[in-house]
Length: 197
Image (cartoon, rainbow, N blue to C red):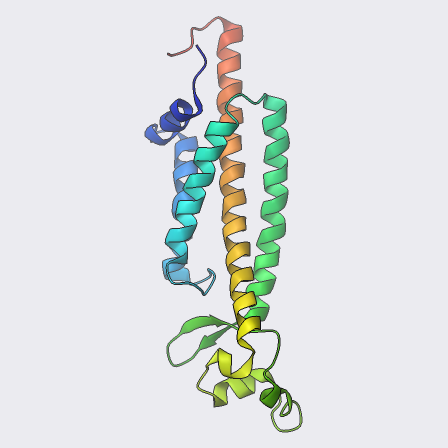
């Protein structure tokens, strides 16, 4: 009898001795490392927890909707997930490096904007060298240097890239696990070994 997506998902999560289980569990826990490393999107608070929940939802969807897919289709989806993962990883690194700053007083990371406020634009570059120099003079309040709309757009873009990166990682890992389990099941069936219920 064919397994449902929930049964297969439950087996992977429950099988703590297997490498695939550690991989799936690690994918969901990985964003929590941001609590220490501070590489995640700077807004909103709780990004690591939000990301882990989104990853878990992604894994549940993978195991539910792709349970009947052939090995060939799973492989194709795994390649797409890997491609999205690589694009979002490097895109996120670029955005993170270009559009965030650390407030030295609090060591917290904040998002910059991309449009300067008119009063700051009038000062750059004649009176101040850069928007970052203006930022230090304005107590590191990003809304005092860049327009609120551009700061919000950068925050949302960073958050979307971060979540998409980890969602594609979850999809990649979930699809890989399903494909490997499919290969093992198919190999057992070809060898005449009865499959576990």
